[in-house]
Image (cartoon, rainbow, N blue to C red; front, top):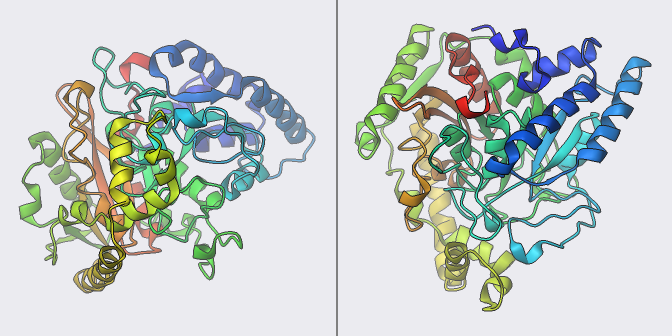
Length: 470
């Protein structure tokens, strides 16, 4: 499906790869792009509340510098002059990084995250920092004290934006940024991608450096790109990935460029449908979109196969010892402070980690290794496992039960050190986006992107704009 947005005149409505192409060809200046985005931020942000901080003056200054460099033949790369938004876990030296906590409203970074350094080195322009669930510890996208972003797909009712990368999801969906950085510890890129109608990539641990990204769970945290389509996600992922001496998990993990295989299609690939038992609890509309995606991919030449799994996806919602213990290590002191202003649900989650004993932590680590082995056996000869990203479309905030986690289909990917791509695959009767998840074995991001690209070439769900910001 050709990208119809190439015909629009407002630079803010262009996907990042088109924006980059137009800037590189000097048909559009970085100044025009930044000004268009800042104008939309000024117009829609009072309701959406996706940004914690907007670096308007500095972004314009950077755009002017990029424009001069490009016009003088000194472009540093194909993404020079393209704006980006950062989740407020990503450190920028001299800037405030709150981690979504009101207690850190004045916390000024003393370093710049590796992923931010890599984007800036490509000439990309940071528009600002986006909201997150406190400590990135929650899937609905709510934040009791810093504010919950407004999902732009419903102009009337406040709905879940998805978390923890809530602000990044809303900003990109509302065309306030062409793409953004999220982080994913149990679904925090994929959940907002699902609820906000975006494409988001959960990378394998070690693919992208976490140096300078505020930690939740060092065993599970993965930064990743959030954008409108697979092409944009692939381009940004390519900038982010690669070894970093400051992150030991990246040692020996050589980058793999997804672009050479992106357009190869799915003919000959073996894609597994989720076990029939996992359909229980999903909305009929989500299942209809899921089945339609399988049919489309099958029509494109993929072989759709059955898979038997040694576990239920919900089992991973109970395997919390690793996440809770590591979250308590990182944020327990603040959670134990009764005078600190913490989100009630987040405080409870962090404090639960203080009750995790070493034996339970190590037993869960052992269970993780066994489930990884079993999953590798189950996935032998299969290129990807397909599931919905969430059980339903975004629900109203007044219906959220904080004791219920929306990460039933996402948590296992982190626990099993897989990679996964979420992308829009339909809409409810009320116009809310639905989402497909493409799960691959670790370090097979290029395969997930290839499958997603083929699906987006055959559909147009990713081209739709939320009516309230159109």
